[in-house]
Amino acid sequence: MKVRYIEGMKYWMPYDTLPVQTPIRGVKIVDRFFRLDEDGMLWIFAGFAWNGASGPTFDTASSMGPSAVHDIFCICMRDGRLDYAVWQDIVNDFFRQQCLEDGMCVARANFWHWGVEVGDAGNPSQGPDRKILEAP
Image (cartoon, rainbow, N blue to C red; front, side, top):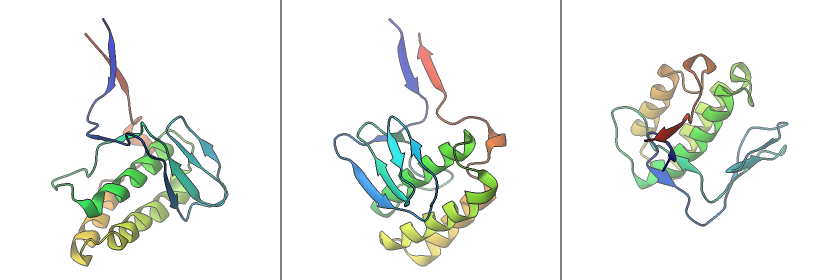
């Protein structure tokens, strides 16, 4: 029996659809697990999986939503649905803003923002996100 999976995913949206107003305007993206409307409204659908925070850190309640949104935008920049040169700084700044809005302390939000900037999150040169693997 073959099982298909995405390595490194720790979390998934089990039932709900999560709406998030974003600063990404003028772009329409339709995906099985999310949709971005031209007015910036992002809809994250049940079944979306993400890996939480990357790097030497830990996940907390204040990072869960922001990391899911940031992962979606990184996926889209890596596969060309969002222009990396246009949107990377806006996506990373929005990530910091969301962390603060969800209760993260300023120092930690600034450190996380620095981390996604230094890690060059979403850069297409890093290769595709969400590579589907098979076992056995």
